[in-house]
Amino acid sequence: MSSRDATIIGYLAVLAAGITLQVAAVRRPGRLPSLGRVLTHVMRTRTGRVGVFVAWSWLGLHFFAR
Amino acid sequence: MTDAAGQAAENPPVAQASTSRLSPGRAAVAGLRQPIVAILLLIALFTAVSGKPLDGFLMLAVATLLIFDAARARRQGTAEDDDDAAAGRVASAAAMASPAAPASRRARQRRLLARAGWLTAGALYCGVVGSFRRYSWPATAAVIALGCLMIAVGWQGPLRRRPALTGAALRRAWLWAVVLVSGGLLELSSLLQQPHLTTDSYAHPTISALTDPLLASSPGRSLVLGGWLVIGWLLVGR
Image (cartoon, rainbow over the protein chains, first blue to last red):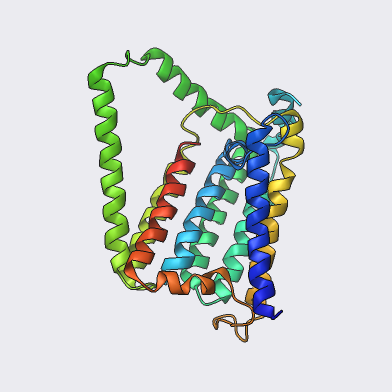
């Protein structure tokens, strides 16, 4: 297995972990928070809210902006 | 943990007399200690050194504003949550003062028209900005403009009061942090193993490098922009 394959597998593993966590949270909302609820919790304060929007903006900048 | 207890733990009450003697330097350090500010500063650093100084500058500017805002709140002796709690109470009071009109046909039509308008605007944005070459100045300006607008919207505070996580859900929120941090570390590791910070590596591709084939075409760029807008729309509603 090459380094490239290992890196791609790593990214896919992270994605799979996120999807698994989300599905588990939807099935057991009292025990596990979904990503939406975590973001809502973080975004209750100005710092958290601005921080999340900055992260969102950074995604756009990273892929499209000079 | 109850909501009130959780907020008290995050923002312990500070005696008015002691905060009035808090120096600007110490207040600024309090702002620097916020995890999100630290993360923004790190992103600014790595973004700047990887050949995108404009992105880094924007991250740095927002981090600086957050530090000033936290320092101001600390010197005034108000917890950050108090400001947003007040904003939430004002929003809730406004909603109570003008109770929602019965779901009439006209109100539903207005809502549908508004949603259609937003969808159209979003589709136009994706189509037009996606038609520009990647990393071109028009695409850069369009993304920066929308990003700054969203940050300004976010600065105003949440649209409505939302319940905090409590109990088992709060205790297990760290699982998401593990997932997100793992992804970030993997990306950072790929970036640092490139022959140069501004040169992609075939053996250690970053997410940006892996999406190059998709983003090489105008439809691909429009599609990804659409996904970005959908995420932004969902965040605004939080």
